[in-house]
Amino acid sequence: MQWQIRPKSLAVVAAFCFLAVTEALRFRRRKTKKTVYGLQHGRLHLDAHVPMWMNMGYWKVDGKDALNPKSLAEACRDLLELVLSEAGLSEDSKQDHSRCLIDVGFGCGEQTIYLMNEKPVSRCDELWWSARDHQVYFDQYIGITQDGAQCGYAQERVNELKKDSISLFCADASKPRIWSEQLLATIKAAKSKSKETWLLALDTAYHFSPSRWGIVEHAYHRLDASFMAFDLCLSPNARPLQKLILRILTTLMGAPWVNFITPEAYRQRLMNIGYPADAIKIVDISEHVFAPLATYMEEQDRRLKILGLGLGSFHAAKWLFRWWGRTGVVKGVVVVARHKECSQ
Image (cartoon, rainbow, N blue to C red; front, side, top):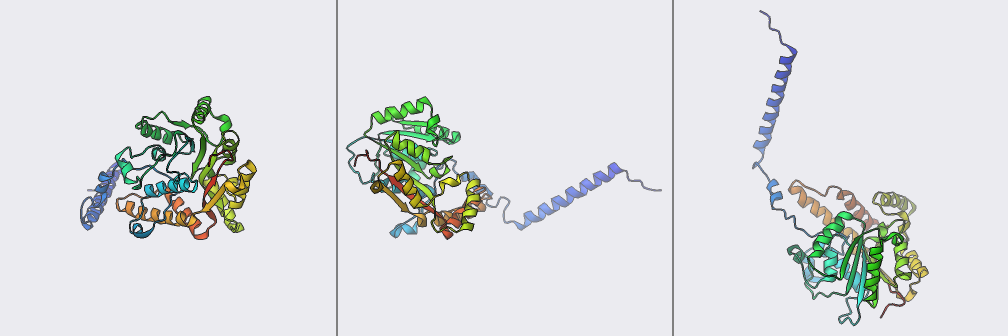
């Protein structure tokens, strides 16, 4: 008697064999593991209520504090504090006149809360809040960001403060000519209540398109505002090949190449706008920004991989910061330019 195997039956047998082999391999792998879950259950303990600071941070530590590395949130806070200090604001222990702040690219709310409140708002704020006496240096605050998701997230956080002196707007900070009437009116009202106005661009201005100078010129000529920032500059010693690589990378990261100029060219542009030469300060802090941030990201990637996670798209940024730190092709600088009408 001859056996005939039909194509349909053959397919069923093949499927059965595939499933059997797959299950055998799965069982074998399971036997080599110490437990069924490994460390995957660590995901169940991750707290979704986390700080949402995002700038490159200031990673310098002194003395015994060096034994306790900073968190990203603490480094971000310290970068803000450093900019305020270089602007001379943190030295003003007794503010005798009102100030208005226009914060362009304000993030997800932490920056706003730290600038405008004396104490933490939520439990996660306590993780990064400064142990030093904290002061509020501004009476009026207008935040502008182009990122709608971040603006909505920040608005929810700031609503907890219940302060009429804080206004957040979703708008393109680099193009004051297209700002809404409501935004312009809010700035005008805030200025009328203030003796001194400042524009803050914390790790944001190099992203502005077509360049950072539209908002800086508007701040000087239309708002009589002083300017403070953490910004990026091109090293005067950058070689042609480095410039070519950087130009490609800045295009990918959404930062116009025209924004990458040397610190001296930056200073000259501020002077051309009208800021007095003796009121301009540019401080190079690259040593305490790029390489330490890359190291932090590497360590964070290692910790996340234990739980089956990782840095994802931030791997490219980690490489970029490491390259900047090693070559010095990009400089991270604190910029302060006081308006001639600014009270001393």
